Length: 504
Image 1 (tube, helix red, strand yellow):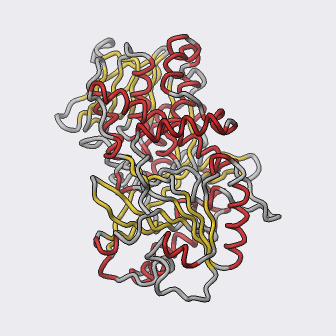
Image 2: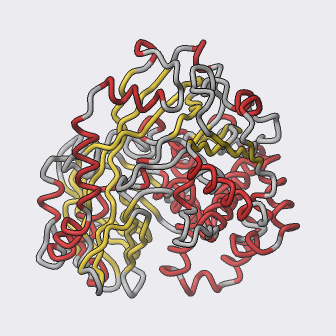
Image 3: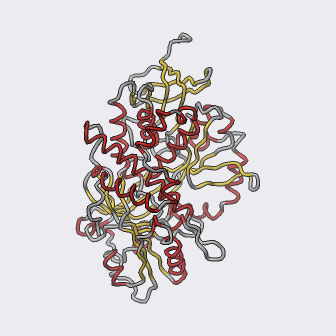
């Protein structure tokens, strides 16, 4: 190929999941003149982590997830993480509400009912220690305006109304308690991603191309030369891009390593797979309309917090219970068993060995999970739903989550359960690594990326004005101003049609 025989674009987004789709739409809203291309390995977008059956579909807002508020040694509860995630989810809702409102006029975006459904969020604990923790958590959270509507009960009759499946057959002497927030949601991130990609693909100078594999990534002046193999028709092409985003889920780590940027050195990945028990029996499904989260086992990863969920996919309700963790060396569900070994580099082998040394409990937990029988899985389910019948449930394999391994001065390396944005110093390339609560707070993560990688543009009147139009109040304001929080939440809920009575 001749030296200048390549396409030139402003932005290349690798991966057609919720992250790239969100960033692409945001950037085109801020600057409609940008020339942008999304590159996807699979035959369409939202096949990996964003697929509705590859995740729990919880609109993470810190309402029910007990691992966001771990007790300190003195028994106190720090609510900062829950407040942060709650207000970031409200940022996401503002963005979706803005797109829905624009779509009412020109039909450019789908109905909110196709991707977001009101579902109460509950926390459920067993045993006196769990009750003490839940009560302390409730008291701490309800002092903040974002959680003022939370309810607490130890009354079995009340819980029987909140979660009818979970009380019959339970030992009447068992100590149990629960909290409930009616304003929770179930989100079909697959449908949402497809709406975003559709909006993007109908705009000038924006393309979504599938069955394309990035097999080369090198600096070229102030931008990047991206080499792409066409998996459908064969052949190779090259794109010259000013900015590249690596939003390819578990595959983002190998792509980050391919870039060679210093900021990416030392990062490793630890893949954890997931499985769910799924029930589609309408007689069972109609009796449980909530997302009920409990406490994870000691040594288990946060993504393995057990929960019994109402799921709404393509207008149909199901129940999911899990997740049950597993292990595979693949970085994507449709990836290669060589993904993990091929990601090992001289600059990350130290942190990876340190993590292996310091996480024996996690290793033991994963071995136990992989080895457990179907009956053992059902026994865990019956801790939530005592009368569960084997014939009503089937095992579903969910997506892969690559947890971050990073350098640490004290330990050599640490395993990080969360997301991390890694960007080059000049802002010309960025990658998103990690997992939960990723999809729910995608908008906040992408706003952070925009501030880091487009600092001059963010200062411009055009970008500031548009951001103010899309986001009446950012997370920092929502966290500190109760009146503004309620105003903004009410507006988003109205546009997203969440004001109808929640399912309960």
